[in-house]
Image (tube, rainbow, N blue to C red; front, side, top):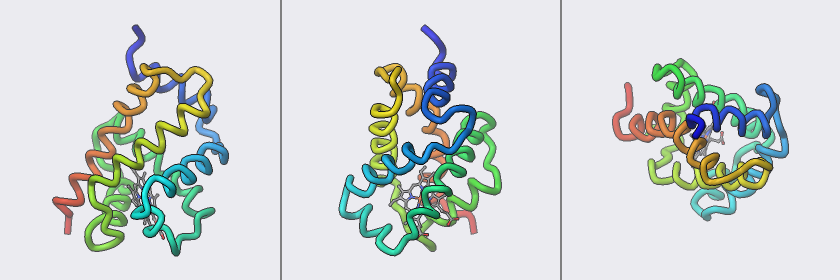
Length: 141
Ligand code: HEM
């Protein structure tokens, strides 16, 4: 069996190419994420979603970078502050809906999707999500 980081990298390339922006991917993700709970939809009620979609792509790179190096970049610190209790106040449990929506998107857009691919994505994104969840309960002043 291939290591999960290889399985993830191959799936990522099938969907996004070499880091290219795939509008279909982010659009489908946000449709699913906003529909996943009224709590999510309410939080984006006043958001310019086209700007948000471009930013998701960039922040995705920050999560992958964190998974690789296990060191918080300035971008990760900004993400933690933006979602933290003093800003948008996003409780840790909502990240589950974020990840489920993302995996549903991957399932639809990756022709090679299977349970190994799903686990590879979850493992790869877990460190960045844990960082943001932890930062919520332990904010840096
Ligand atoms: C790992 C998961 C997540 C990533 C990578 C992510 C990414 C981002 C990025 C890049 C921004 C823009 C930051 C800026 O303005 O500089 C943002 C803002 C925001 N995020 Fe997230 N996010 C995540 C999880 C969540 C979750 C679970 C929620 C729950 C509802 C959420 C709600 C919001 C809201 C409300 C904003 C502000 C939108 C606005 O400017 O109106 N995010 N997020």
